[in-house]
Image (cartoon, rainbow, N blue to C red; front, top):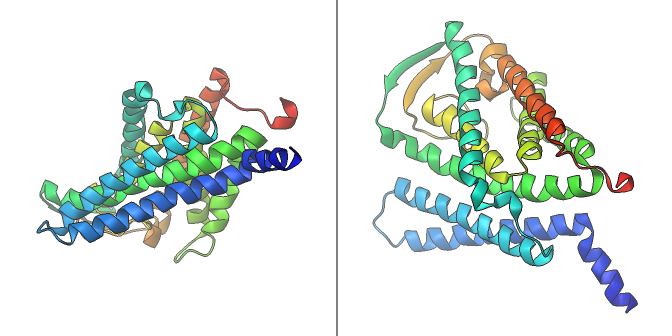
Length: 287
């Protein structure tokens, strides 16, 4: 009886859930990608078509493995991925990501530092779509769905937000080309903005599609640098010059001063709305 009780406590501990969740979802995605590429190598499809199929497969298996695991593990409905909230939150998330990236570029354009050299065919969007689609689904399920959610349920919303902000800041301190500005913007975007959107809606759809639109628009549409998404094609072939404060330098527009300002405002707005909606979670010692 004691052994069973101890095992039950270990399995229900939030850190154990995080480790199991990340291992299962990441493992399922890695296996799917490996098997998928092995099978697709036998076909006559071009690289863009293969990458789109892999991206959709990775996203699907990330969703399915997460839903199945935590439905069994936590014995609950997976409301954060409810089909009834998909349309609304997916559209809000995609619009938010696209609008924010457009604002960053608009500021650079107004400053006279963004130049469009050529407009390419829509097929040039495929590489960005593939990488951004995978990143949006897989990263958000791992980060917001597992890591943030389970920390928040135990330690509360405020502490979970602080942990993610500090974690992303620390992880990017030694990134190639990192600056004080880029570290702060990354911490705000990945730690505050996306987490705040989840806290407000309690839906992973909004963070998945915000992340997807973000990674899709910056390199895929505007032809700008995205440090986590290196592609060779974009809808707009562009040239960006000028101060690194406005352009983000070698870290891209998402690490500019306007990105820090607008993402901070948007993140704080989501938190204010969440407070009004009373979706903050108290730490376990205050429940």
